[in-house]
Image (tube, rainbow, N blue to C red):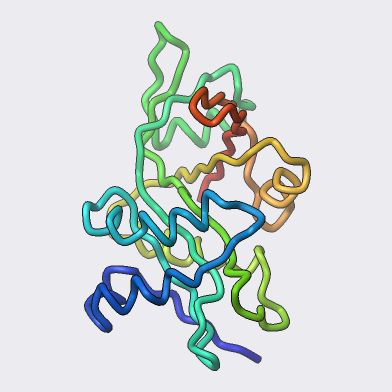
Length: 195
């Protein structure tokens, strides 16, 4: 069975140099989501150096290939209390402040900003989105242990298959809102999870 390592992109720069990493990332392919592909090839290094978000590379220890990536950051998030169940309100109140006037909670949350696999390399048997999400949460749990927090969120396009994936019993994200990007002419569904 394959073994996988999760490597912070900044550590990879230290290990092999920025030029070598740019070359490696130039082969990253994600035809199902051109935004992820463009991010990895053109922005991941710059965003990490500027501490906007940190991209993590999941590497197959047998082949040395980059199988997948995820990018994390933290962001202030506003969530309407009307969008939450009673159970979610109770959980959120541990991490957030409720503004009675607006009826919204404000919370510092972890954002999974990018999440995808590299179609340029063969994917080992057993490697899939569920395993990638597990790797993502392993990293988030390490960060949480150091700085606290307990809310994770992400945004995805309104595609049934994507929503089923994020809301399945393993990933356990729940829809709380949506937003429309005028620039991209795209509706994004916002989902959160407590941990």
